[in-house]
Amino acid sequence: MSKVVAIMSMSLDGYVADPNDGVDEVFDWYFHSGDVEFHTGGSDPMTFKVSEPSAEHLRGLWSEFGAMLTGRRTFDAAQGWGGNHAWGPAFVLTHHVPDGWPRPGSTVHFVTDGIESAVNQAKAAAAGRSVGVHGADTIQQLLNADLLDEIHVDVAAVLLGSGVRLFDHLAATPAVLGDPTVTPGVGVTHLRYPVRRA
Image (cartoon, rainbow, N blue to C red; front, side):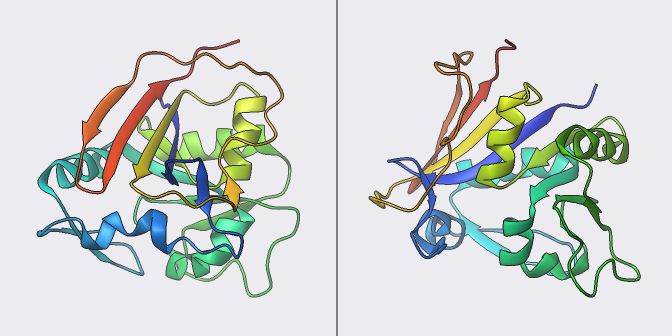
């Protein structure tokens, strides 16, 4: 059965972006933490340079996910991934479809009828594989709706002090998680927690 898994890089003090939506510090480990090259694929391919533990971690993610769910803010920041996300079809939760979209040949889809519909569409497209989720607001909505199965956080070795927090606006706290899987990398620690259903 397809799982819904939050995937975010975050500073040690809980921020996924600085006050200006900058993410360089929390994503630096992707590009400067080692000598192992990892190629993403997709319409807008990137090559990461990470440590071996982080490369192994990324290989596992890339083999696990069959679709992506994200919010409009992340879609805009990523410039639509060139029309095709590296993890397969992408479902963007939004109030309004942006101008110029959808595009011919693109696997980016826009969902305007709510978070449950977005989850259902992404799961169907994932064809039994997991659905990865990006975006702080989208992750918060999933947690509040009890629709998230796991939280995967790449904790970067940086303190931002302010900015966009990953776990703001939660409806029910404390939210107790299961025991983590921990993978230490260089400049980052990969943590994966199962979400206990309410």
